Image (tube, rainbow, N blue to C red; front, side, top):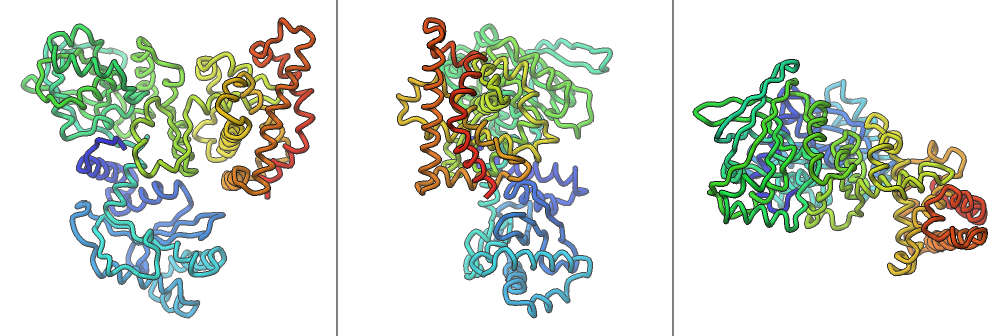
Length: 578
């Protein structure tokens, strides 16, 4: 979450998110929407069952976690819109204890408990019991399978002492989890009221809507930010705040020279679903600032709430059903691309809101990796304790990794050497799977990322050595990837979980880890040796720079270096199947 965002605003945003989910998916039932949100935020998108109703035995949902220990999680929940407004009832603790005892103390107690459960749920609960028995084996593992999730406050003396502290998720825990989850999942912003000065309408006949251009008072935005988070208003922008001297200059003009602000600022572009005006005040429904995020971050950080500064505001009213989110509206996305081309915007910025990027962010988060899909995003979250143990990568870096490892002949590395604009402008669809295919293709993406990260961390003895030999880094990554993946049906026989476990072993201090790290160093050495051998044909032409960005150079690496490494790299690849 944004580090300076108040707890009150975060709670309000969380409730809005639950309401939106309830209306869209659960006929307005916020209790069910709360359970569904918690499962997605905590576990991703596993298979799970709603059981909440009369005769549910005190269980609201059962989550099945294939390949994990324990293989199921049982959830009881208590939701109230008064987040943290009261203590959880003693009866809730007692009901939760009955469920725990039923699953803990043998088949007889489980069977007795099951008698009071309505018939349609008994099969699900029996299968859950079988999963826990088979995967956990003993109580020290089995006790991890129970969660009491509530928006109330704790009564610590009522907690079951045989369970772990993490079995109880209270209001503060829920809001903390939402703060971590909200990246890329921010709900629509509240209505924005702006005083209108000099309105100019624009009618788009074919689309049948009227949009507006007028001067807006920046003080109206500053007032809005006392009750609303700036990040929510700019969530559909392609970048977050980048900071620096530009932000400081914007804030200084707003505070000290407001009359000059209109002249030195290009203006704001806001997309909304509806715009109505009454008594000189325009109200924007579902507003989203798609150009001007840096300005609003600068204004929000100012202590001055009153200012005479004006800014040109272009209000674009879209014509689409309101249930279609801005990021799923192709016309809105075309507007975002168009209004951001006049500034220094990079090709990857235009891809940051693509559906597959949102999904990649979620999938990487499940692997405890912070995926910075928008430039400046890490600045927003780096101080959160949750992310201090996360690895970190970015849309930019992942694009380079996927390009470099895309072709067996090394031509992907040549593409990387041509620059990011080529990757993200001309070949984006070649490297990034669509959202529809990511669930079954993510292990390809994750493996390429782990290999590149492993080579960067372990192939070089020092940062100085890396800088000296950086011309060959992507070639070394490609070579390492080509050898590791040269195993029959590797991708169809391995999972993301197995890849993670294998690379965690490679990065350990054990015998397997030492062999893997040594192999990374050997790969780097072999790649450079290939250059020294091949350059003898024309010493003046084949400098390291020219060699590693040429197709001929990669043909030579493939023929000279890869054969020396193939057997050991294949053995490393087979470790992924263990």
